[in-house]
Image 1 (cartoon, rainbow, N blue to C red):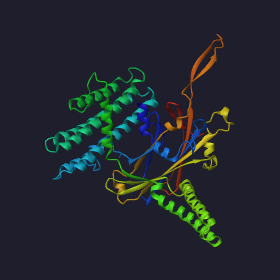
Image 2 (cartoon, rainbow, N blue to C red; image 1 turned 90 degrees about the vertical axis):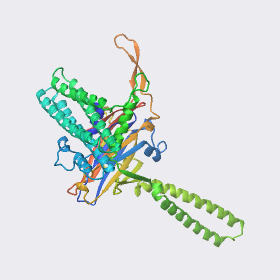
Image 3 (cartoon, rainbow, N blue to C red; image 1 turned 30 degrees about the vertical axis):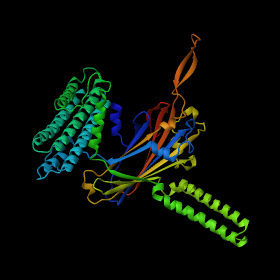
Image 4 (cartoon, one colour; image 1 turned 180 degrees about the vertical axis):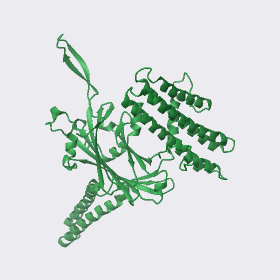
Length: 505
């Protein structure tokens, strides 16, 4: 649980999502001085040869079927106290009060503000918990008197925000439609679960430290966790479960998943993805057909000048030339599609806001490359931290290059908006990469030097997928910035075991 919590915080680093998938969360900021903000992100995957991944066993379509690109707005950051500050106009709670004072209630706007409030509350709470957790990790038992007032202040702020929101909800119960009340209940349940989730993570961390050192802190954390649990039970905000049934607990995570997707609607963007063939297939096909027809006409004119039209040689050559034209056209199309990545993206995704404004574009390219095609110094980066005793080994690896380019368009007034930066989440399912991997555990014989008895043991058989990520973008001073990070995904036949960040020497 704690690993999942930390993985949510680190943008720009690969972490495990599940047994088969790793993911990378990236954020793209807006430079208001530019008409277009362009971010390039390149992945270089080094796959060991025993896995037998190459252009024959992994097609471009299979790679894209195994990956996922999620695009949404970055959650706006607001301190908890500002959420209930009457003078802070960006607060969703203040916007809600303004909406309720209008003659006719705009349910769409109410829903948007409620969802935005839920996301901002959860992110603000997560960031506060993360700072405390990181401090606890560094102190490791020192400065025990520091945490009681910090946790107490956090609990007070949470109670103030929850009380403000729930009082607003109570006042509206008699005055507004059942749909608006339902939206409030969903948001209430969401923030209550967020408190429960993050406080439990922090409580677990404190309990792993020395005993009885943080009794007061634990009491504060437990009090708020129990308080929220009783609140959800009293107000019917818990999923219905029946004891004794096999599927009794299924509704818990299922409902939380639905609730999370519901709340994220305020941050989601519309996207329209088109492949190279869909966008440029007709152009490439027309060029291939034109070149083939040009060659055919040259041969046809030569044939007419040499043979009689109704002769057998004329007919035979006509058939042969037609076959050549047809094969030439298909061959050129294949060549064009293989080389088209140099000029056209494999996929192009248009990004639009819910209001219909074009925000930007995402272009993607995939290719197998050789070591000679790697950027300068990347092979040296790849070889860093390799096993010293095997430095001289000439390793055979397949190299995949996946490149995506995010372009964000300038929009007047966007910098004043609460939702402006983008977050993308890239996921790759590597199950198809491991089809030819050996069993995860391999039997091995060993001799005991004292008893001279032979024993058998099972040793783990692992593989390393090394990944270099390069991010390139324009800084506010208009200079080009390039950042390189290296990761190692340790896998076996059963999936991903862990992800390691390889630090530069």
